[in-house]
Length: 242
Image (cartoon, rainbow, N blue to C red):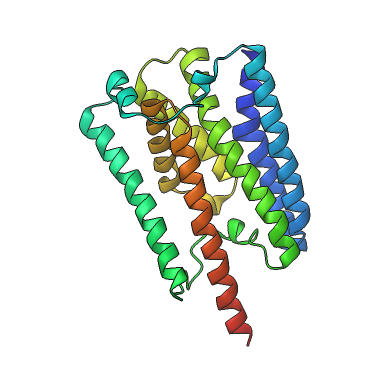
């Protein structure tokens, strides 16, 4: 229990706090590559610690969400009313469709993100040079993988088995809070009800499907949108400079 608690604290408090410190340094010094490297290795450490904890407690792979998404699983477990489950699946499908549409618009020469739409603390981490882009890809890749395959199973297992919470609504809320804290990184400009709702929704989907596939898809398409955002913002800034 103590080791599992340490994992949750690292995920939701320590790593976000360290990110808040390094983000402030980026804004003042512009050392983005150092930020990418530090965050990359910290995510690797979280992944290794997670694996060690799961092996130590002999947690089966099925409980870690390492399986496909099946409607039969959703129907069998039925953690929520059917209309709630289908609504969540519909919203997620809508997110994927919108992401594909944004990519289609970009492929046809449209500038989707003309104005800054992200918090300043996130905007500060957008890579500008080719070298920064390479390290950003490495950092974003490992962070997306860890957050999708480690964070949600950890929040669920801790809430359900360590805290012994059985109510699926409460479980989804706790997972959402954990996700919110991990994304907040102690930055005021990241305070958003939307982030909390996304976390609760993803938590509910994980409870429904018992799989990280939904999370992987979410982070994958989010990565796609963020990459387009970077391209558009860099294009707008280069145009303004000239």
